[in-house]
Length: 214
Image 1: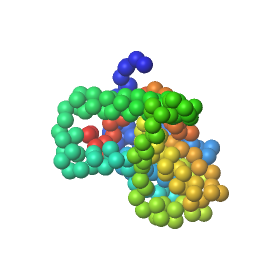
Image 2 (image 1 turned 90 degrees about the vertical axis):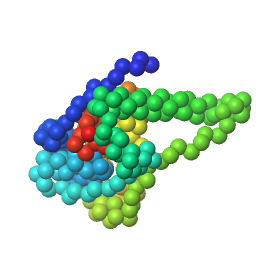
Image 3 (image 1 turned 60 degrees about the vertical axis):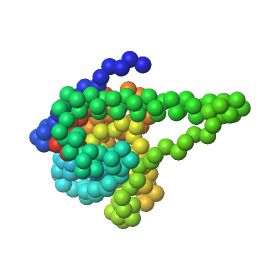
Image 4 (image 1 turned 30 degrees about the vertical axis):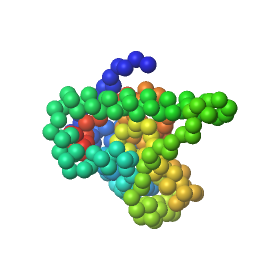
């Protein structure tokens, strides 16, 4: 796999609003009555999408974090990220994206070998549980989406899609009758295992005002 870097794009609030208007245009035929934004970056995106849709959808913000995201929010770590030169921060983010995608596909290959049983299973052993996203106050999310007919789950950027899938599954469990679609401004991986229903650009690292290292 050739290690070509993705495009990096720094976006201010005006630029973010413009991207969200484009995303809302894609979602126009779906006409969601609830837009769920995944904090932190997805919260701003969802707010701008709701505004671009005329303010009619109800805005719901939920928080779902991977262990790595929780680490980034620790005060000392967050300070170090913000103090880092932008070129170095971009390189670190690129490395994180490459590492996580390579690890994902390696683990997927190992799972296929394990499924064959026999020698492969004995050599590889059982797969270690992968750290999962954790929704903060899922009861509030469930109450907020109850009764909605069409729900859009929105994030700023999708890497593995683990967080997007986790929130979408929680919404579906809370409201099985709803139509649910997903949206994001960008994906980062070359072969993302999860592709949002609506997306502006692939293979893009976004630098938003809300980014930990912006």
